[in-house]
Length: 102
Image (tube, rainbow, N blue to C red; front, side):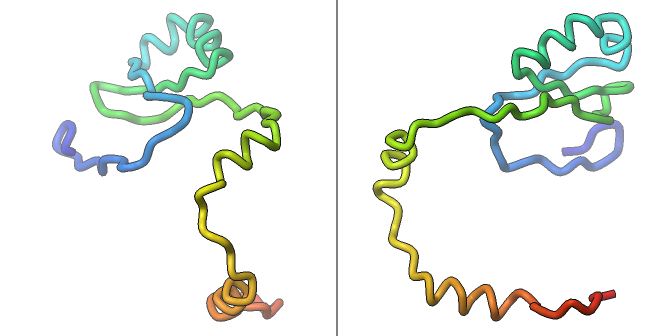
C-alpha cells in the first residue's frame, strides 16, 4: 500500500490482541494518559505523522495461566510428531558449530 508516495507492505498476519488503533503524533502527546490506560487494557496503537505510520505501541504480553485441559483440547486434532524426523530436519538446517558465521 502506498501512503504519501512511500510503499508500505501490508501485513498478512493477525494478532491475538486485536486491531491496532491509528493515532496521530499530536494525539499521542495530548492524550498520553488515555493511551497508557488503553495499553494497560491490552490495546495497541499505530502512531502516524502526516498520515504515514511511523511507530507502534503495544502492551507487554502478560503471562496467562492456561489449564492443561484447555491445551489438550486445542491440540487434540494435531498430527503426531515424528521426533526422529524432526531431529534430522533440525540437524540438516542448523549448524552445531560454535564458530561465528560472519
